[in-house]
Image (cartoon, rainbow, N blue to C red; front, side, top):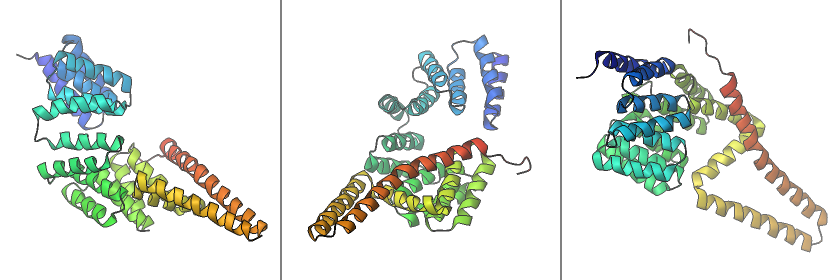
Amino acid sequence: MEDPQIKLWMETARRQMSVGQLGGAVESLRGVLTLDPDYADAHALLAACLLDQRRLSAAEYEAGRALAAEPESTLALSVSVRTLIARRKFKEAERQLEILREAQPYSDFVWRTLAEIYGFTRRRDEQLRALEKALELDPEEPETLADLGRWHLNHGDLDRAERLAREALELSPEHGEALVLMGHALLRRGDVQAARDHAVWALRNDPGSRAALHLLASIKARSNFFLGLWWRWSTWMGSLGDGRSILVLLAVYVIYRVTVLAVGDHGNADLAGLISMLWFAFVAYTWISPALFRRSLQKELAEIRLDRSF
C-alpha cells in the first residue's frame, strides 16, 4: 500500500504542475523522494519539471534515475525521450522511443514525438508520414493538428496549414501552438494585425511561450522595411527545402557571374563593377539580417511584460 504522505505529495505535485507552479512541484517531489528514493514516477515527474525549467542536465539525471528504478515505465520512457530531444541526443531518443512504441503501438504521442525527431534530423518525408500516422490514430488531437499544420506551413502550403490550425482551435480554442500556427499563416498572407492578435492571445495563456515570442519578433521583422525584405526571402527559401534552396542560391550566383562576365566582355567595366557591388550588398544583407532578427527575438524574450489583469 502506498504511503499516505507520498500519495498526498504526488497528488499535490501533479496539481502544481497542471497550473505551472513548477517550483512548488519540485519541492513536493523532493519530499516524496526523501521517503522513497527509488520511486520511479516521482523521478520522472521531477525530470519533467526540470525540463520545463530548462535545467536540462538535472532533468536528464532524474529521467535516468526513473528508468533505472523502472526500466519499462511508459512515464519514465516518455519523459526521458523528451529530455534527450532537448539535449539534442536524437539517436538515443529514437532508440528509447522505439521501446515505447513497442509498448504503445497505437499511441499518437509516440508517432508525434518520432516526427519531431525526424524534423530535427531533417528527414522531412518521414516526418510527414509520422504526423499523418499520429493523426490517423487520433484525428481530434490538437497537438497533432498543429504539428501537421506547421509542417505544411514550412513547405509553403498556407491553405492546408490554416485549415489545420482552425481545426485545432475548434477543438481547443486556447491551444498555444495552434494559435501561433494561425498567426504565422495570417502573417504570410499579410494580415499583420490578426497575426499580432493571435500572438498576444497565445502569450495570455502562456507568457513564457518562445513560439509566441518568435511570432511577435517575426511580426516586427515583417513590419520593418529593412528586415521585411529578408523575412520574405527567408520564408520563401525555407519553403523550398534544403535541396532546392541550395539550387536557387547556386543559380543566383551563376546568373551573377555570367552577367558580370558578359557585361565586362562588352567593355562596360563600370556596369560590371556596379553589379558586383550589388551582389556583395545582397550577400552582406542576408548575412546581417538573421543576426538582427535574433537580436529582436532576444529583446522580446528579455523585455516582454504582461499586465496582471491581462
